[in-house]
Image 1: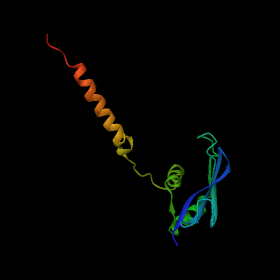
Image 2: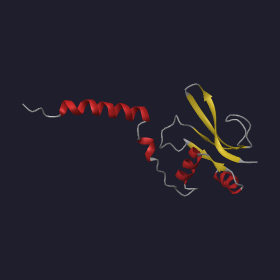
Image 3: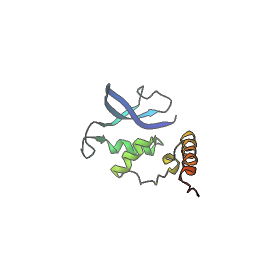
Image 4: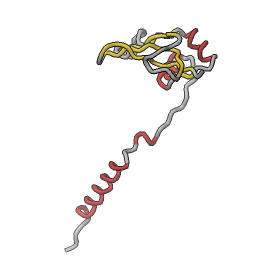
Length: 120
């Protein structure tokens, strides 16, 4: 059974509140989980100590059992000091898409003859 440590959403519309849970990866996001490990409240300020609460003893237990944290949980664990920081670099994410690049090239091509000096 492949285990994940992930977020399960709760709260009402536009007022999210997440539980940090250990769950089988085949279960739905808000579905059945094995153990609740903590909470995450994104509505609180980033420097608020109650924004992320985790039972680190249980989290380390599940990690030792082979549970894989999702990307967001991995970042929370890095901030808590439970995992070493990993370098992340995605230079392609900042590049515009294919159509936007085509539009920019067309715009540059259209603007280039207008800027060329005319000889008289």
